[in-house]
Length: 190
Image (cartoon, rainbow, N blue to C red):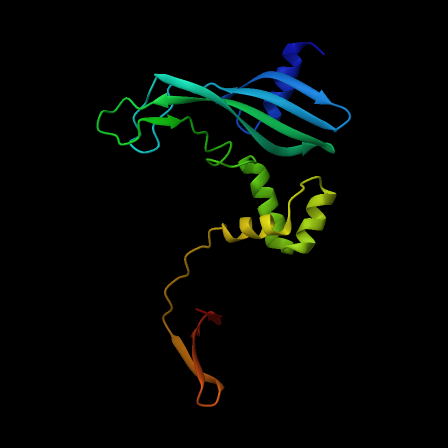
């Protein structure tokens, strides 16, 4: 397959088509993995603290991220990003790393879309059962990792109840007491 065709195919499979460029694709048949060597193409990265754009590159480094498998083949993304010097004199952060929030969270070891899929597995099945399913789907993750991703899930804000029910109860007579607040209209515990 010509290199142009390969770039077209991999651009569809990348986490973000706009900010990334595929430099090289390496397949390892023994480990059944594909490694994408990718470079960020952001014009001017912005400082995460003051949001000032910077063109002054301090250094570069490579992040290795796990991504969604392609047809039972594990995918690793070796992301080459820049460390820049903040151009704002008033900013307390002198050096910052280029961030790609649509690709991965800062310090993450998996892409955002891979983490989202593992999070859905964790929400649906929990720890041990989720771990077994994730392993079958080539999403190897421990049950603790799945539960950590579930805890990170943002819950929607509950509407303010109009009618509130209060129930006081005792676990042991004269020892331990508790109170439960219930939204009467929705029948949910607050």
